[in-house]
Length: 377
Image (cartoon, rainbow, N blue to C red; front, side):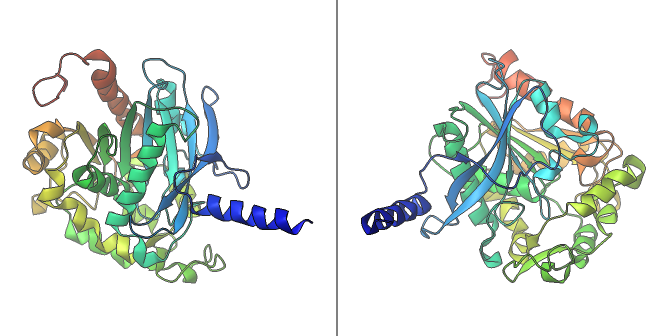
């Protein structure tokens, strides 16, 4: 082979590897969708190059699956960015078991919205940086870059005018931190859906979950994965007690959850508090919907003054933590634990989100008050 060609090819590859602004490309390789794509949507897998911090030029790759709808009122202009919680990946939003019941991707695309279901750095098919670097602050920077890519049209060739940040647990905390601290037009989501991430924590529940984490290298699923040190996962057969309310859950879903579990890091677990400060929450100036399971062990304990009985209880707990421009609305999913998507009553949450979004993006666009809030419940 011609030496000049080889040299030129190497330069080209190096340039692509270090350029964060390149377009996201369809992934050729392992498919991320253990669950099936909804037949009514057009879906493809993309990678988005990101850096872990603004000052470190090292490029990592976030893998996500974009499912689009050509609904001119919804999916053609609005995308929901789905961000999973600690030890979860894209399977949380699109599980293979009974997707018509449990898949958030199915539910939202069926109403006409597009979704971009990502693996955060450190889980699934995305790159696994050193575990100590997976702080809430760094993950928020990662998400900011994904938001920019969605708006720029470098994911799927669509320049989405509206980006909705939808997060579960740690994913909600990352979005909350990003929206409360980032600045500049287009760098934050236009709307936030924050599931199972309240300001007040049930310490006993947090301690229980913490006690079930152990080094991923000791787990049969990850022992040969070659992960950097510092990655953790849950002990076998503990996810049911950690994340589910058994009376509202299907044992088959809990079993699937065990088989698709992912990793987390001590840095992620200990940095939750950074997203809960008043400076962060009062810095959010986009309409926000908070949702939680009635029996979420991490967020709820009526005896300790942490009631999750109904939406009014959550509003009472959270309203002082947000500014009027967050237009805060709340929702409680009955008979559900921490993983509200994966309980049998998930459809009520899915419907609540799509109705709330419709009211903001379609029904009451020109009827907002001085704070930007729509006249919706």
